[in-house]
Image 1 (cartoon, helix red, strand yellow):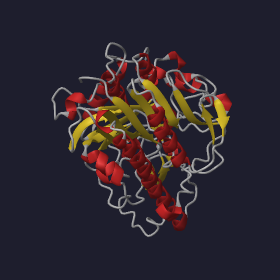
Image 2 (cartoon, helix red, strand yellow; image 1 turned 30 degrees about the vertical axis):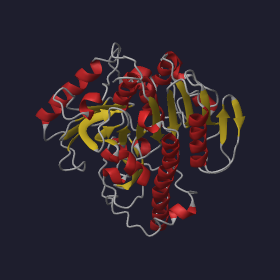
Image 3 (spheres, one colour; image 1 turned 45 degrees about the horizontal axis):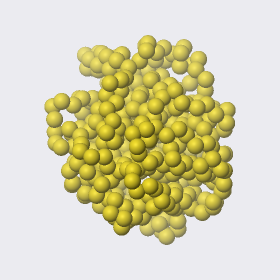
Image 4 (spheres, helix red, strand yellow; image 1 turned 60 degrees about the horizontal axis):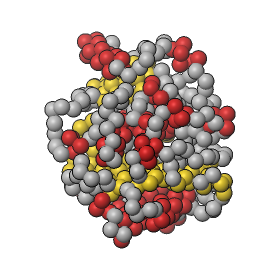
Length: 447
């Protein structure tokens, strides 16, 4: 990298990779994301390190696995869960960039503790705070640089407004880093603009697989307990409308960058914290929609599109990529070199230029008492509690557990998984340690 670009991160909430035309969806309208992909690179095999909100965001901000940063499940918005300053023990990406001369801001979702007060490393802070958010309508409260207020209006619009204001009012003698955290694709799937919902009321939803069961445990679906077909169709139409609403907001932000001449020197990332099942295999939600927790493909696959300086336009990469790699990519773009440390990720610059043999051949993840290794053909989920491990041949899907039929494959993947985590953990975890930790919320799927 030569020079230091501006950095804009669009970080959505519960946005599955499958829910974008750039990844094959045939019904959702996203012209702004399509344009971004045409001018940038699409990471086809992008994953979250953990399929639930708070720890995934912590991994992006720190470049560390949950095993390293200690946040293993989502934080309830109540003060007794949200009050701990989880990130204060680590130097986050915005702190690093701020120290390196970047003007920094956040608009939208933080969800890593103390949302109700500005966090270190940010010059501008506009985060949803207070009670568990309604997400889309007027009752939401924001922490606006230390002042709690309820500006009213459609949440996606408010977040986009603040992002544009940050870009407009920032000091022009510094590069900027801005984190825009949209909520719209999170449940409840309702109250999206009617003009957008109408686009999908008669949709076929052909890109959502059948409700064929693929999970051995219990399906909880605590975010969407309703079961009749009319409510399912309404929720899907709302979700699709939410994606289009985010796309419109992205378009406003891109238009501002273009009008001010900043677009060509801005590295833009479009991604999400984790994936989502929207009745995929009968599941509504992400990793904690089942008991025990799941790591099925729809929960762990995320969109990841990069555009801007040194990103080949119109390219696609099949290399494994995750939030830990994004941390490294953005840090190095900002002139930092955080490689010397306990960082599992690598900057994506080599694979953005084309296939390279010097890249990992597996994707790793964890969620509470479960750890995962996923290769191009197989996925192993190892659990610390007294539950059976699962092994899937991904060429056949995830409906049949081969753990007893393929002991040699299972042994090899277990060894590779253990070796990977041994590089980064202070000691091997055990089930007593996990169940002895303070709770992060009252509904932990892995307890």
